[in-house]
Structure formats: C-alpha cells, structure tokens
Length: 504
Ligand code: NAD
Image (cartoon, rainbow, N blue to C red; front, side):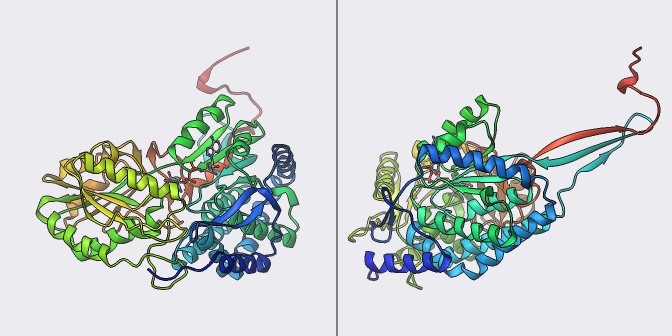
C-alpha cells in the first residue's frame, strides 16, 4: 500500500478547490468535514439550523412562483450555464469528491462528467417537455394533456454519489420549472458546498431567482423537515432502505410525492457459454470498484457449476493484485471505506457468512494503516443464499453461488428483497433474452455482457421492491418532477356530455 497524504495536505488541496470554485466555508463546530483517506477532520463547519431550514423552504417556494412561468427553454439556459461551470471546475470538484468520499481519481472525474452529461440532457429536455393531444369522443372538443411545474423538490442524497445524484435531480427539476432544497449527506458537506456554489454562480449569471436553490448543510433531523413540510411537493430521497422506510410513510401521510432510490443487492449470472475474460473484467469493476460502495455494486455472483471453479480462481488471482490505498495515486483501484463503522460492518458480515458455511477465497482483511478504513475486497463462496447474502452490506464483498439450470439462476437472482441492477454474461441469445423478459430479472436495470454498475444518464435509473421504485435521470424520468393536467376544450356551440349522458 502506498503512503497516504497527510490531513494537512488534504486540507490544503480541499481549500484550493473551494477557493477556485468560490466557496466561503461556514466555519463552526457542529458539523465536521472529514476525509476517509486519513479518517481525520479537515474543517469544522456550522450546520444549518432548523429555523434556517424552515426559512429556506419558504424562500424556495417563493422563487418557484416566478420560475414556473419562465419559459422552459429559458430555464434550460440556467442548466446550460451550470454545465459550463462544471466543465471549468471538473478537476476541483473531483478533488473534493476524492477527499470526502474516497473515490479514486478516475471515478471522481467520472462522477463530475455524469453531472455535465445530465446538464446537457436537461438542456435538450427543456425544449421537449411534451404533452399530448388525445382523440375526444365529443364533436367540437379537444382533449389534451399538459405538464406543469410541480413545486419545491426536496433532494436528500447519500455519501457515495455526493454530487451526481444532486445533479440528476436538480438539472431535471430546474428545467421542469421547480425550485430545489438540498439536504446532502452529512458525510460530504464540502462537495455540497462546492456544487451548490456553482449553481448559485450560474443563477447569478443568467439572472434567475436567487432562492431557486437552497442548501441545508445538516444531519438527518433537518432532512426530516423536508419530509414533513407540505410546501415540499416532491421528496427525492437517495440512501439506505432503512431511510426510505422512515421517509416514505411520512411523506405519504401528507399526500406528498416521493421518489425513492434505495439500497441494492445486485447480481450477475455467468452462463457456461460466457466469454470468461469479458466477464472477469465486468465483475471486478462492478464488485471491487468504488470499494464496493455503489448502490449498483455487484454483490452476488451466480455462476454455472461447469465454469465456477475456473472463474473464481481467475477472480481470486486478480483480487490478490488489486492496488489498495491513496485514491489520488494513479495506480490505485480501491480507495478507503467511508468510515470505521463500514469496515466493522464488513467484518461482521464476513463472520456471519462463514457461520452460514461460506468460505473466503480472497481478501477480507482490514489493512493495518493509521486513520482510514482500507479493506481488501473479499470473495466468499456460499453453499446457499443465506440471510447475510440477501442483505446489502455497503462494502466490497462478493458472494459466489452456483447453479445448474437457467431457471434456478433466475430464481436465486430474484430471491432477494432489493431490485436495482442485474446482468448476465452469456453468448446464448435465447438465454440473454429470457433474462431480460417479463419472467427474467426483476430489477430496474438488466444488462447483457456488461456488469451491474456504471449506468449512463440517458436511461431511467432506479429499481424495484426495497430499492423504492423511483426513476431518475434520463428517458421520461422528468415526469416525476411535473404535474399533469388533462384539458378538455369545447369549441362547438353545444354542450355534449361524455358517455352520451343527457341532463337538462
Ligand atoms: P443513509 O440512508 O445513511 O443516508 C442517506 C441520506 O438520508 C443522508 O442525507 C441522511 O442524512 C438522510 N437521512 C437518513 N435518515 C433520514 C430520515 N429519517 N429522514 C430524512 N433524511 C434521512 O445512506 P448512506 O449511507 O449515505 O448511503 C448508502 C446507501 O444509499 C446504500 O444503501 C446505497 O445502496 C444507497 N444508494 C442508493 C442509490 C440509488 O440510486 N438507488 C444511490 C446511491 C446510494
């Protein structure tokens, strides 16, 4: 493992990025900004108070009143400007993502690229928020469907995509005519300050209402204000299933809308016909990349018995050589886990897996370093899909299960509470199509001959079952950020009632 940078070096690097972006850090002592690279605190921040959160929601609601009648292509101009600022500060924002979330450099840059991409998508969308005209059953009538801005969107986001998830929601919400109040993860406050500042700058440049976006730099309690406030029309919450279970019923109780992006327990099926070299690459990136801290991380490998030993042996060899350490080093592929607690959860999961008859065939140890929680990604061969395998442990553990018949693989695949991402490696076209069919994978994302992670922004992103059912990003996910109105216009001089009802 390479030498780690010191906390002082990280602080200087973060300060440089923040200065270039134009962030004034709110100094205080109630919200620490720390780096998983050393496990130490970089800055002490002042958190948003409950009263400030209350005011912020009110300001956003006020800004919405102007924004909703601004023509959509003009709203797109704001998002175009944000995209340009993101390009200019790509490296700065990526630095902060590496410092606070521990992502390796190329993945941190990739996260910012994703933000730029969604801005471009949203700019195009600003001229394509199409309604439709529907055939009316009445003569001299026009029946149509129109989409209108929804209101204030509350965005609650997780630590592992500290900036991209915000941009998926915000770029689309803004072109849809909504205002946004963001409660980011308390583990990544610097990234949120930076992203938020870039949007503020874009707002200033185009002359949009200043309060269109508000940042709540705080923990869960302040997030709960977004959940309970009737002025927040949509709560888009990304994080654990535990969080979604708390948030969803509370928003439902006030008849608000939710968009939930929760935990995954993603699997790849490897068929006997698979190109094993291709599979190997796809599996290692999906399972060990981001140190197993993606919602789409590959956690279960379901391999045909004929190729299981061979594939596991190849995987174990690659795992034995994975460079773990400083995420700023070009050679590093696996950075730190976010906290000590995450490493403890990994150890506990491995113990449970072993108690269930699992055998660790690669990795699994915590590296003996000062500060950060660095772990060797683990591969565990399991005799069956026991309780621990059916849970999401947010760490790099890959459970391997074997199957004999395709139907058995699909049954194992779907027999977990989560339903986010899935894939199959096969050269058998029939098998590939069956995996994608109605009785195949039950996930929101189903791939062939690629891994489970690394989705493009053009598609709708999200999953079923305990993953929450929400869809964000591309395709027609924008509809969640708007309200639909059905309009009937009578341009005749008689009043015809629907279904031939006669009255008066
Ligand atoms: P987390 O649930 O601990 O926190 C996520 C966010 O929710 C944070 O901002 C937190 O402050 C807030 N929060 C927690 N409880 C809340 C409550 N009761 N009311 C309001 N806000 C509350 O998740 P995490 O550890 O930051 O992230 C990891 C989890 O997120 C994993 O389960 C991962 O799979 C999931 N995730 C899902 C997606 C997806 O798109 N499906 C994307 C990224 C992460």
